[in-house]
Length: 352
View (tube, rainbow, N blue to C red):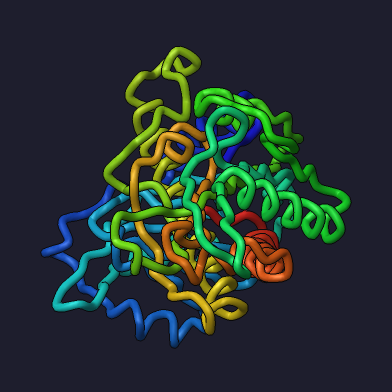
């Protein structure tokens, strides 16, 4: 997510040095007793959100969170604090932790402080293509008339509807669009807009890029949501702003992992939102990962939504219907609201 870099970086660095002072480095796990994570959370009354793709998890209890990844000694508590403890391990599909890991969780879950937690400060909606770039184009006979269906028109229509819904729901947040009319913006310009939105301390921004699909196979159909591949890593923190270059590497690794897992969760909620409202008329192609330019260069949680195929007669017809586009907008809106509610209820967790 995009954050107040100087203030938050200071907090992160202070947290690292503070934690390093009293948390011991992980012991060799072959010498310690292991506890089944599922049994642990049942005994503690905690909840677990698990992403099998990245082998990462988010433990939550009493409004506090512990974000971790299998075989990684670094964990994040309530986003702001880094701990080094015994790395969780995975055996035969189950995750196991040590007593040291459990003690870190207990310490976090017993905290009473509720200040300084993150909330969503802005949502940037990117209507794909525009101006001289129409995007995917196909001509169909709709209601007896030859009709040219253009991606840029559909994306702008849905983006405007989504903007209106979010603005009404969140008058205290910045709801923004990369374009509000039929104009051309380069991919670099779109990302620059996203990365330069001004935010207050402890505020995050979400980036939603809306597109329409096309294929040589005219039968190809359905909507899908893309997020950044975990194999791709951005430089989130400039190492020139950190005296210890190795520290910048650690921070970038952890923050980028958080962006990825947040993006996966946003994609999941949007996919479910579209499924609920449009699943009877369009196929849900699911959640996918890719290294789209407009996603990979935005320093924040970001997803790309493909609404359907202009090359598919049925879907192209649906996407020229204003009422149907409102349903698609509502599906995206519902997914975003669910993510924002979850994010802010958990006080700004950054793990899945």
